[in-house]
Image 1 (cartoon, helix red, strand yellow):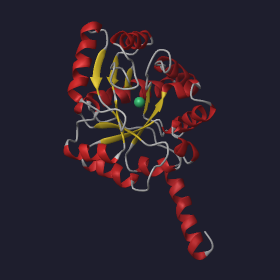
Image 2 (tube, helix red, strand yellow):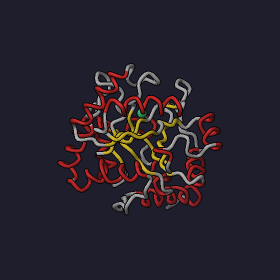
Image 3 (cartoon, helix red, strand yellow):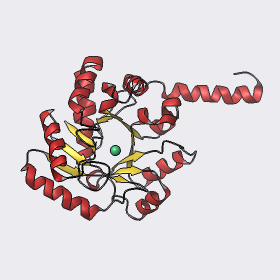
Image 4 (cartoon, rainbow, N blue to C red):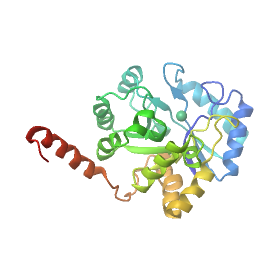
Length: 263
Ligand SMILES: [Fe+2]
């Protein structure tokens, strides 16, 4: 399996503090069948993203792992003004392995109306935005239909493995299932931080998706799609999402009802 959202590097964000803690995470992932991990440190007001430091930490881990795991680099990219300004100067600084896929994390407190334009701008740069864990964002849990516009525009969605196991509560779990059911999800990733607080759970999530939706779906979300993102390849044709265009019809009906008093 390919885990494309993972706080693996030590001492740079709220992930592992020491190299031994990083290695413990890596060993746990190997045990659950993960072959590839993208190390994705935060880039936000709290943690500075330094590619050269990340590369050094990754090389040190690689030396200890001796080829038992293939590691890549990306970023847990928060959609802030400063990050966007920097991205405009260097389009691939934050992407998965310097290719086209970019993890995008929204703020928990506000998702401005300009977000749609920003996601479109990212695509004009040649990037493919991956919206990370909407099932853990309080605004999107309350209004999951906000995803429809971004999905129609070609954005992809990642849910957290531990949301499917119930670790983030009932609402995150039921929303994750609902999004997979509607084919709105393209990736499952662990977003692992530490063995104590947020251990990886991709193997368990894969089994849960296998049981609920079949092996083909589980493999698509945990192996095929994240594998394509790791290599910078286009995703294969995905199953038709449901409810994306019905939502737009509903919005239109609401609009006409507002003008003419009927739908
Ligand atoms: Fe993360």
